[in-house]
Length: 184
Image (cartoon, rainbow, N blue to C red):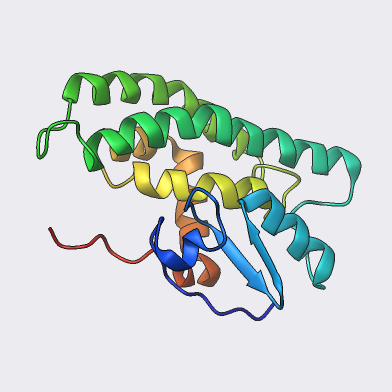
């Protein structure tokens, strides 16, 4: 579908005008404003022609929902909220809590193993096709891969490494990259 990406940071006025808590992503389509990934994906799947990222097949659709839930509840909690945030927003400026980051990395090991097995068969999380499950997990892996322990864990997972390399090369992934962090 045609779109215009407007790179905005969380809590920017344009984002806050749509999301009550200033989070991204947000979307405008005509007079409709939506926030939250699941709502946006469901709308796009229903309104536009083309491959569905939540398959209409009941079993495949349920598997996508399962992986999205695991991503939002399990992977995001450790990979992003504990590990990445531990580096990016340390409690003491310029001094990441390496003990907390190490504990998060230890927990991520099992998560990486789970994902490595999941993509081993056909390079996707569900049904041999690119779905919302992949779309939801890939940004987490991208950010984990920016830091030493995460990069090492991901590099040790051959199926997941190949999965990331293939999907990070997608034109849609490249075009939706967030802006670089502001200079401090």
